[in-house]
Image (tube, rainbow, N blue to C red; front, top):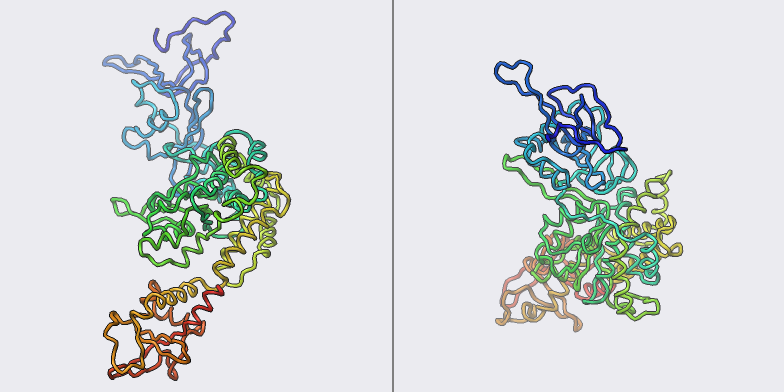
Amino acid sequence: MTESQSPLRLVGQPAAPQIERLERPSYAVYDGPVSVGGKVFRAGTWFHGIKHSHGDEAGQPFDLWICAPLHVDAETINSDDSSVGRLLRFKYRRKEVEHVMPMEALAGKGEEVLKALMRQGLEIDYTHRRYVPAYIASHYGLERVLATTTRPGWHDASGAFVLPSRIIGSADVRYQDSGKGALLFTERGTLTGWQTELAHYCQGNPVLILSVCCALAGPLLAKVGVNGGGVHLVGDSSSGKSLAQAMAASVWGNPGVFAASWDMSKGGIEIEAASRNDTVLILDEIKRADPKRVQEMAYAIANGTGKGTMTREREGRPKLYWRVLALSSGERSLSEHAAISGNTAHAGAELRMVDVNAGTRTYRAFDNVHDMTGAVFHRRLTTAAYQHFGHVGPAFVERLVQEKDQEQVYHRFTEIRELFEASSPQAGRVADRFAIIGLAGELAITYGLLPWPVQTAAHACRQLFQKWLASVGDGNAEDRQILTAIADFIALHGDSRFSDISAELPNPNVRQRAGYYEIEDRKRFYLFNRASLVEASNGYGRERIIRTLETYGVLAKTDAGRRQKNYRLPGGGSTRFFVVDPDRLDTERSSA
């Protein structure tokens, strides 16, 4: 029996719908059996053709089943690059599947289309597979037009929040991907299970509260105008940092899949950040990062813009963009890890990935283990994180979308931000980050998603921010680094590269001279030459260094109208030096 012949119909089986005639050649989609002129066509996508042979003007009709029912529902326009596509729909094991196909995939023989559809389960007649791209291409002038995006997160044009598996807030936008990426945003268990078995035990644990709220804060970045950045949990191995990150990952998906690693290139970081846009980027074990590139990667995460590249035709490829907060961990701080390669720590990188103590609290990373031992507490919550995940993040966004007064979110942010006192602009930016993390927690408490008392999240974030501020100071971070670097240079080379300026002859034991010292009232003042001043503060220009020294009163002696003082040299001659008061360096460093 051929595809077009009528199969036997069992008693009680409903008759197939009737169609009077077929247009040939044409494609048709039948969601169930259809009868045409006594022939029954089973469910599927059909090509009704007609073959003309020599001397046969009427031609011979033929019918080909090419695939399961495949609907072309709409034209799509990608909001990221304006490329055009088609929204395809079919069923796989009774589950409806949507696939956004870029029209460029139809170029050539259309093998990209076949791969994408077969990967997702569409049944295709292998012999007639060449008809599938042709069938899709036959749909043009579609009335329904949808927007698509290749990034998860907020879709500006529609106001929807896009996830690969669902769209929150609009029916007129779709997520478009290749289908080859990892399934990051997945669900398991229940929201109630997550609340009782995970969120409940965060209470009394500022590090866990911060981690969960950091994962929730991503959708708020665009709403309150706070830039991305990160929080870096610092503590010894097996201190509980990984549990904090697993709990954060469980907000959006499976912790074993959603969490990423520092062990990747800068390009890999860009891809991972973009795939988690407006959510959270979790990076474990900073020791696995390239020390030469780790600060550059921290800048990239916070700045939200990927590196520009070119095609073989020397045309610019679209850059990747993202807005995320990062939750990092490691046994070393960012600056300590960068120092392994000999790189000077950049204040900007440290501010973009701020350190949080997660190793020397009451129970290492924890403060309250809820009447359990540390090991039992850790094991119980780790197990729960892999049993209940992927619910609270989308639920949080659903409530944000339903907010009638979107300005109210910003007003609540300004209220919470007042709790985070900071004088300098740099500390203020870090305060913004802790405040928005606190805001996310307080909103989730208000929405009934976090089973904590009001102000729990804000107070925990404020506590950790104040500890960070006490450790680094509220001044300019670059100034602090310059002063510290010069103080360290003196501590290392005070006797090996400096000698007494009042000596009659130069000290022959001093090699690679950095300058001299002058003793007054049993106190040394260090006389730096121009080259050594820049060497001591590697990474900063001389003018920037001198400006810092002037600001903090470190330059002890100068000639009128100059920044230096002229001295007679041992053995004859004279030159000018920058005279540094080391006490001023120590005072600034200790007060920071």
